[in-house]
Length: 402
Image 1: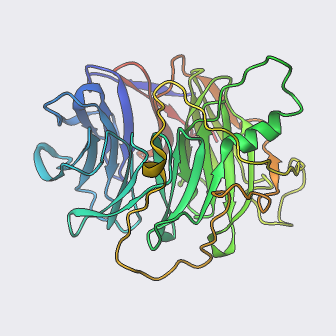
Image 2 (image 1 turned 90 degrees about the vertical axis):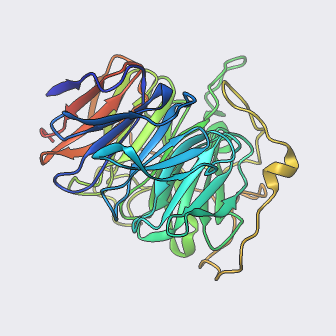
């Protein structure tokens, strides 16, 4: 596999990477201490800046799909909009975008809304035209670590947190469309395998991604598993499954949107491994009756009652009144379907848990260091993965052999 290093963009560990669309799209990376670097597709440094005078880390970088000349960077509780070709010129700043330190950002397809999630568990949506927070969604009881908009449904977004919950939201509502507790699923799966006294890492949710079809969600968790969810009619949770992707915590999961089908998933983990999975034959991903011959058989399990919340590392538990409080906004039309599943402990409707995929990854390699970020990108027409780790450099892996 062809690899190359991009050096001298940062002086400390790179935490996040983002890629702009289009054949000439730029890349951006953020690191500890508030550094931001913009790269060409050849790996040449175009511009560098430190966005945070207080030394807050650059935790997320997102290019606007509607205006590639705008780059959004989160640092502390602030989001800065920058011109990627002249980073020192701040286009706009949102000083209170997050209530606490922002962990992740995502933008919807038309570039009108930016979602941020923070240490307080809040999911906040910024109306970029109005330049302000238009809605705050509360249901996570711990740090919210990741957020992604749902393609083809610009008002739907999914969040995941260290409370081990994956939540689908509609901007038209302040309560979730549904909630899936990963610990309930993992405990049911482990119930017949766990020996007395044996401990497993809890499935703290680190990274969530939605395939370009808009109906399949992947979530990387601390127990090394990737959870898959399929959304059906009415935005209901139709099916879910999980598979073991890494021997230690899975920190990254990103669908690739530039390969022949939308169900290629790249994952990275604390075990230093990077893997590429073809999920097109998964019974969770494929509609009923369309799974190709040779696809792994499904194992159907019922999800047991609500499990206790667990904390580890950076996690913290919010007061109950803060965790359940919902900030109301002006009335808007209800999203089709709107039934909340799993949030009240009634998960009997979520009865299908499928183990996928048994065939293993299509490609797997040792990166050699704990993976902080995996960014799929087309670099000069070549499918690639840009990987950030504990170092100050980026590593680019070519996928041209697929």
